[in-house]
Image 1 (cartoon, rainbow, N blue to C red):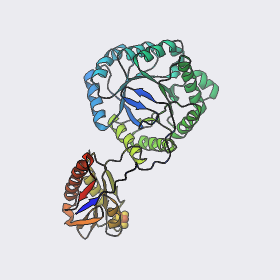
Image 2: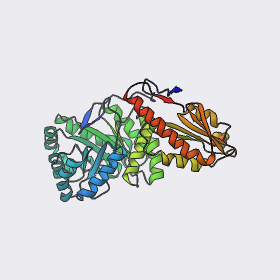
Image 3: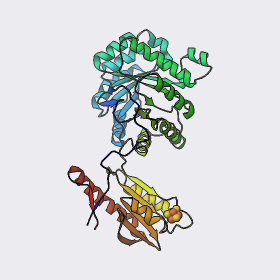
Image 4: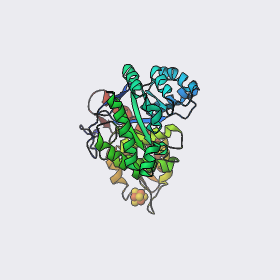
Length: 383
Ligand code: SF4
């Protein structure tokens, strides 16, 4: 028996159309225009330690990171850029503060882009013409990265603190310097650690020009708080179509930033959803340990690359209904689990066999979906 997985022919709906921005290139990744919203992260290694930096970049790449940024505080870091760029599978952005000469070094090293911070504007001010010329020559793009923590002192004085208006004024001023020199391949960020200020800043900025925008809540905090702050802020903006590339900043290993970023985009249908576990919160009716079951199923299916929705439900009251809506599901009760594939009960297994049965069935469905993706209708056979 064959069951159509019901995968929609049209892309799933989003909350708003993307705002029209001009498109730039960050190496092989397009940012802005109709390009998918990309996910960025930043290495935590000493950039001059090339092997460990490349190892971390490889881990980020495997996790789904689209673009990586490396810090470049010293000459030895600048000297390492060419080798890192050469061996990285994803575009490398050099993050430069204070020292314009490292901007030129990063461009020479073949970095896909360079991030400059206008908070250090007096240092960069005089050299924008040369930076724009060198970047244009090598096809390097720029990120104008305004950050509340390093706002231009003149604007701090004018506004009293890093308000949305102050962040935007800094960004627009720096943008005008590049545009005066006919350089347009840049994106902008106006980061703040307060999601409310950050959202207002990006909203204001989006009204001022068609620059592609890099979203970030800076210093968002440890994983739990940072994930929530970033999700709330990015959600508020992306749901209005604002944002072309994102970086979640966490006091946690950078791979975690990528996972959170991808999950935010998937939740908003801005990326294809991969594995999705629909598990109930459990309640007094539960006849199985839902938390453990959901964790075991999640762990067993980690890394699955097909869009599979797996329902793990604690009882037979709501369980069958929810499990029916998923590609695969279990509704538990009386020491047993009813296993559903796209709404059909395919078998009932003892509670101890639920996890292994779900994983086996998921693998089988994934294989069939993979074959279907290579040609033909996405269908699943019910064994
Ligand atoms: S599926 Fe059952 S156990 Fe889970 S929350 Fe709903 S009623 Fe409670």
